[in-house]
Length: 336
Image 1: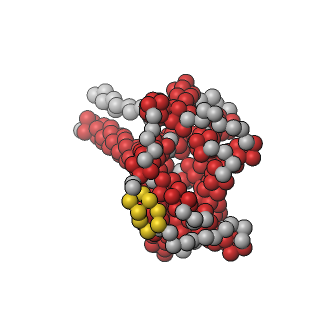
Image 2 (image 1 turned 180 degrees about the horizontal axis):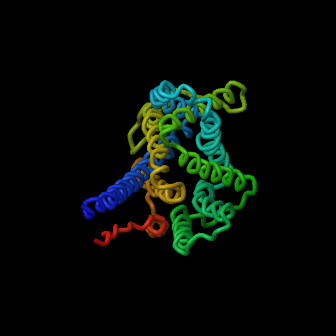
Image 3 (image 1 turned 45 degrees about the vertical axis):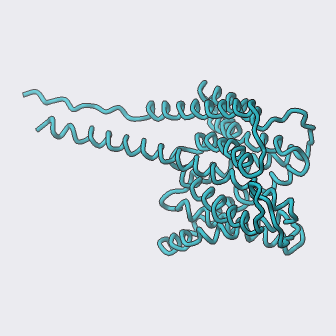
């Protein structure tokens, strides 16, 4: 009798541990898939902008189409919870202003003043900025694994983007740092998604908010709007303008934000931010495949270092969870 009752809490702990591991594994898979989706945006948008499309037009279509595709999730969430927008309106607005709109505007503005590689490197300092933010907020130094993982990942990022010979631009640097802060906001806000605020509803609301703001900026003339009927070249093949744009809006942006906001609550903002560095590696592969930009050996070494850094940070996260897990106490049989 005693042994059977004592096995119940033990079995419950085991089941909970298995569920938690599955959630972390699914979170990593979703995070990698999100990075893969996001990484295809640049190689597909670049030839469109070079052919005459303005950034405002591309962003408006990208955000608007993606937000509409995910809109059913937002409508269903509002129907189930009539007060959803009242309770979480500020979070959705913040998501649309920073992770959706701010990140893209800051990054593309920085890219016009400095080499793309330098702007990309500064933007992807976001994981290190998150570590520093937690350090300052909690006044607790990160573990050695996190510090080493951060250093190794950033070293790999430097090798991947190849910033040799780049000129310094103060305004461009500040804009790129603004993009990095917006990336941090993306992971921090996404971590708050859950049952009360469904991740897909957050993604849809943020994308529609960003599209609405871009529309206002284009109507006011602050953002140029040009959308000519052009032909672009992808992987050596001429295609109509709507082919890359539909891919970026319907696949890259929709899946990127949808899978990303689902992944962050499962693995945490810090681990998710380091997993997001894989977007740089996937972007190299897409540029190689569709634009003929062949990466060099040094970039492959940098990619390996990024992966090592992610593994170190993930190992620290697993270790912290094990230390925080409550010990299972076996029941002691009562004396006769």
